[in-house]
Length: 421
Image (cartoon, rainbow, N blue to C red):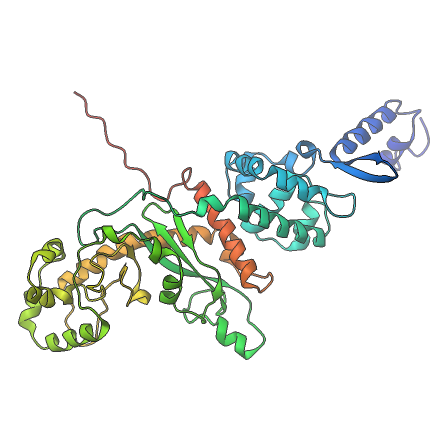
């Protein structure tokens, strides 16, 4: 035995071939395995010009090789099957991203996709993410930007409006309704200038900060997101303005509208409320909401008397096809709850109608909460304060939500118990 064996055992083990004859073979095997995980450079000659062709061994490059199905689900929010599908769908574009740029240290297509999905789901600090994937922070930021562009274009088909609606309310006061609409904020740090503070101010309490962007989603009755708007400063546009500027009003089919007569405009609606406020006898004669389906067969005078039961839907469009909160009062295509006025009687029919609207509209709140499970939307957004970048992030997350919805539905399917003959 050589001297110094016990003073520094591991250093002696790596250098001494007399005491450890198999050490050289082990070192060669480890070096060969490490080279397989790195980028292989092949120099090809074409006339007088030479260029380098980069070949990526994605299956053996860490940390992707160390992630199992549970780790992928925890870090990205996708099952292993969904992740594999996205990887194969974007493989060619991801390979082009991996082979471009300077430097020899590059990520495989799978690692580039994992880096971006983990950034969306967990939203770690950029330096920690770069250390985990063994790249520089600047290079990690470039991967995020490039992979987001690929996902936004490749997963666009998941955000298209369907030709046939999977669910629709066929009977009752909400006949013809196919979905619900609502907005959610993307919080940002407090802006420095006073003008930006006024523009990004969130008047609703209960968020991480009082400043952020506003995004509107339209969801069907099963939780599939059919439309999402671009991100706008929260105080720049009202909810109903976002709805009117979106493609939802043009997509709603006017041939399947519910029968809910009401005054034509806001002035006549307010006038009818004032004239009928003092008459308690007429309020007592208002029937329950179950009788709304037969109102279309009555005379014009009876329609004017019954207009107070659903005052937020215009007579110009005879049927509504969306559900919304009180921020959408004035839209002709949305059922909204009744507003309770001070010192005014709030009838039982109105309470039942509000309860029915809330029970169906809660699906959009559940979907927005699932979007906020991606911490880049659920926490304070620290990235570039650009509406285009935030809109792209939201679109990618919406596509991922629609992709995972069949395997993780919001509502459990009712199973009919098989009766024995």
